[in-house]
Image (tube, rainbow, N blue to C red; front, side, top):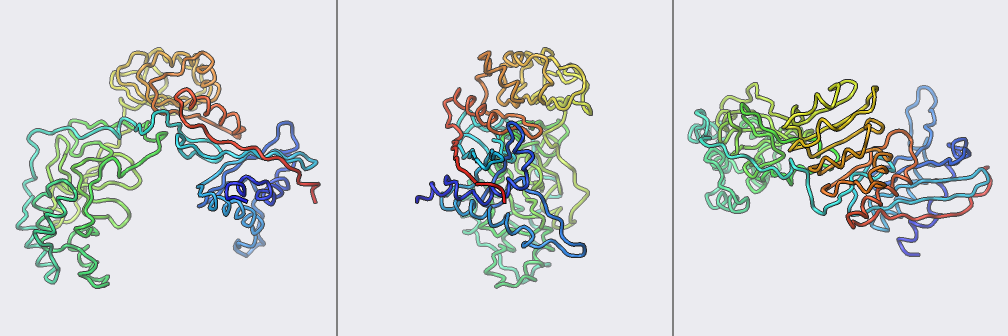
Length: 462
């Protein structure tokens, strides 16, 4: 039996199907009844009940051993097939007849939630507009008055008298690798301490002394890197609703990444520390910024210069723009803006229509806006989905299945889209959603989501 056939053999799934039947008997017996889930090599989500444990005892693996064993059979088959995950929809009759629908992957579909497909990549290698944005030039940008490479070097030598510094050849090699000239302050820092583990000979206290002296966990010179857009990947669904807009008073440009963000440290909590060679309108060349690991866009100002950071430590800092502020991004919902008219603005890039209790909304107020590129609409919120055809600048569109159906039937799906997503709420059957996704992929001649149907009989319930 080949590795592929074991994943697509009903015998692999039978233990799990029996558990699903036992825990979902009433639901499966209803007309059109089905259960769905997802199993991956690093986790799973299946509709099985959690059995309570006796009072006073913590939950043990043994309490869910049958589930673990059943899922492990599928995960083992995934590994054999060199596949990352698989989603399923199971229909099981009271008599035991089982029909198992398996959804594989497609290189044109991002991972989604549960059994539903994620964003559909209609144009190969396309990325959302903020991920295409390069830093704006800032004429007259200069180092801060506090920048003093000589003072920086003296201060570090006093704090780290035994540190091993980088040679000029090592600094030149780092610049050649990165393709950018290091600022004088950063060179001064590494001339004192190159932060190589081989220099500390496994002495963690020595590494801690360096961190305290510099103000962050210092990267070894050979590990310096550039925080460009490739360093912050983000699914289309979340990236498309961001906007890279830098206010005129910002010290840091609102960007996903920049060829001028040179990462030299870590906060200790996963946040990257960098010197900024492409500052905002009110910033300084060589200022120190932090890229929050929980954010996909923007950075915070930590210090006006590396000297300031080392000599004086962290100041109050200033939070940079996060890429989700009006008027570029607008949210119409029961807790946000009260109308599409209120969202309409020449600078509008992203319109998200969420949960709405009033009459369905018209998109007429935003027709013709020059920068509108993303529209997401909660199912049932649009008065006329065909108005979307007039939004000629869209690159990302997220709608409910009925709204997509209306566009498909009218041959009105905007052909300028780079990516799309299907908004699913509640416990909908994934099979029609997958079929709809494949219809959209076919319009762009993109690889479809693979589907396999297995049939068999589980016998009567025990």
